[in-house]
Image (cartoon, rainbow, N blue to C red; front, side, top):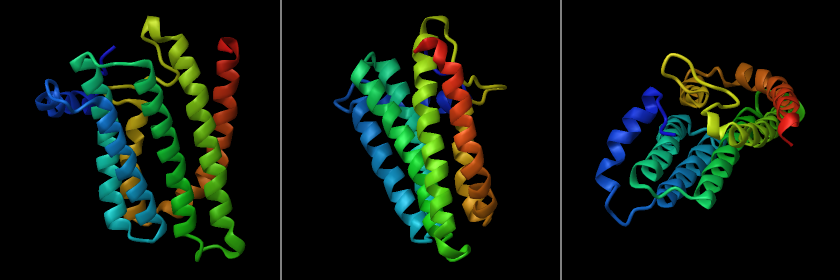
Length: 194
């Protein structure tokens, strides 16, 4: 199923020149993984402007790899898993990175601990959501469907402005509690598919 969110439509247009080339969806996923890692390292080192730019690029490439796979007919089970795990790992690392970024703001490494708590929640939410998505694949359903042309994952684009506006401390505090709770709720929803 081709993505129908605004960002998927834009990505679909951008990947068209790559369709009949030797560039594979997995190449785009590798670039997404590298740009996501660069973003996380930059955030951890408090180079927030650069981190945000790479984060937005990486988030867009996450849409582009899937669109290239679908439009070019190069979908594969391995490629889907590579994309899924790359996305889950990069999003999890974001929270560890901002936890490191904020360690001067809280004593005794509390921000790092909160980063790991949020990362664990994000990681397990991603794993359980993928189980649900795979089981609903034939019906076109998703664990977390979008609304009004926006996918649930499109929230990732907001992570860069959150850091740029220096709102990442309250965001991290909320995520350190919210992400594990979300993981538990997603696990509970996925139990019928396990």
